[in-house]
Image (cartoon, rainbow, N blue to C red; front, side, top):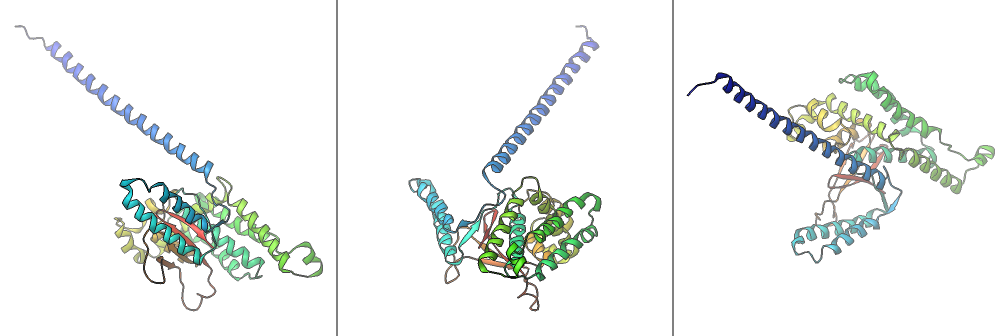
Amino acid sequence: KTHHPHGDRKETSHCHLAAFDTITMAENDAQTQHQLTQAQLEAIENEIKSTQLLTSSLLPIGVLQQQYTSSSDSDENDASADGTQQQQQGFIKSATFLSTKYNSFRKIRGDGNCYYRAFLYSVCEHLLKRLISDNDHAEYNRLKDVVAKSLKWVCRYGYDEYTIDMFHEELVDLFVFMEGIPKKSSNEEDDGSNTDGSSKDLLENAMQQLHTKLNEENAASDYCTWFMRVMTAAQMKSNPDQYLPFVMGENYHDVPAFCAREVEPMGKECGMIQVSALAECMGVRVVIEYMDGRVGTGEEKLVHHVFGEGDANDNEQRMSITLLYRPGHYDILY
């Protein structure tokens, strides 16, 4: 039998080509799957945008009870839902308890940025109330100064001023916007009078202007949210020893690595580490009610934590905001 070396080479070439075709097909399949995944994610994002405002109007606290009551009713005939029903009952009891402490709440869009949006919106609301109803400028001036100085401060921890300046400018402009909202009616300016009715009208008008501004898509809310992420990360980097044990508990070896993956990217959900860091950075007291389906015993039915307490000297004057936490999501309580 005659041996043909060229035939062996052709056979080997065919094998290589077949292997190459297999690799190419696998790469094409992976690319197609990636495109499908991206398309699905974009569709979900577009649906969220079309159905959820960045921040809702003020809703009665009873809406929470209705939400969980209707969910519980739909599961009653599902035999496999025993665990779910038990958890739903916990949510119903929690919502009932909340209705004894609070009157209303605002829903925040569930896009992974809800804590930062809730923090921003609630802080701005409190500042406007102090400016208009109480004629108190102290906290506004303090926070305005914190924001004004924050650009140079965060740049000490690895951020490029040229890159992030436009985001910082949006937060500065938001404070300018609040300061520019009329604090007195034309009648008050003319004769110096001040009535509860006119003050209430001015506050309602101011809140509506704020609500409109912070619900604009791809505008102030998004820009300010991202810059507050940078401030949160800078706060952690400025005091790494304080945060390192918590970061290591999340399987990160250092604070910068945690910030790069869990704090800076838009859409990354916020844990207790970030909550604490932003509260301390801004000097704002944050009270969070935890509604996770578990109900405690005794007088206090929900677990709640307080962040950004400050020291005894400034705690009474420090602004305090109250948020509701449900698994993976934050809203504002009133």
